[in-house]
Image (cartoon, rainbow, N blue to C red; front, side, top):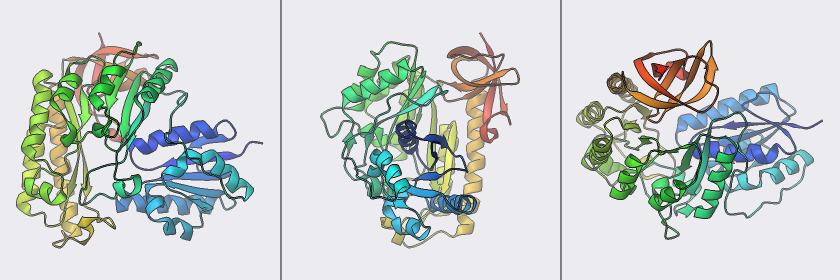
Length: 428
């Protein structure tokens, strides 16, 4: 009987991509599932971006260990690389970091046999087939980060230099995914805007090559750094019919003085200029973003500047995080800490403003047409996202590919994950 392996994933799209690869590799020999709470061996793909992510990881592990007393446990990822002692204390059979994901088959086999694994030295991880019964796939194009943001621990885990995947490997992987039926490919990495900095290439040139690939597909860009948004990249994204008209443009604060303390090295003026340029070419272009509240020294005035900026930008969605001091970062030892109560209140206030911002953006989309990639069907309706990353519920069952729809109204619906704002739409 084949051993059962379950993989739990925390964190970013890059982690999700690497989980897809681990699942693909292991499925040849084991019965592999995602988030299954009964198994012979568990792999936890960890994240260290916030203390809360780490806390949830430890909570999950304790629960799994109570229910699977004979199971083996493997940790990989950013958290386990930077704090291996946490997992050794929890009784893990193997504790690795980021690079060890490339050798996951060897590690699993060694753990099950009570041996020491032989690690591989391959430079890149690539998907060969992708997961079954999915419409959207992730494709990692780079790793590492050359920024030095005061609060971020990720570069300590993934490296402080850019490591771009060879363009031909990206093109081959993209073609394989399209041939295997995927309709939307999401380019991901630690900071994809810096793709090519290490090999005389660029994200702009990569997009031009990807756009020549035939087929019925859509390309979506994951998180982009304002510092890497060139004019020609902005123009290409806004004017190419196969590139989704949505980006996650990282902000972190709407106050210039806070951005300076964070070492983000851009201003709100530069940030808003990017939004204005994209919306001048397509007024419906949507943006999601991340914002940290309660960064050390954040005053009420600075927080109000952030609130005002969110109101002005009309984001589709804002991910609000309370500042979490991460070990070995500059912000960890900064003075003038903001109290937990203040951070909690500011988080609540900003989420309310962000929700109103989302409502305003979606209200302006009513009556307009867009193209939805259907992902699920339920009770006579089809659900999916359009090129603006708006959720839709479409009357009728559509089982394949893209559907052209007209938005009727936006509302909060329990039919969608986390009861997010969505649009009721009809096929046209």
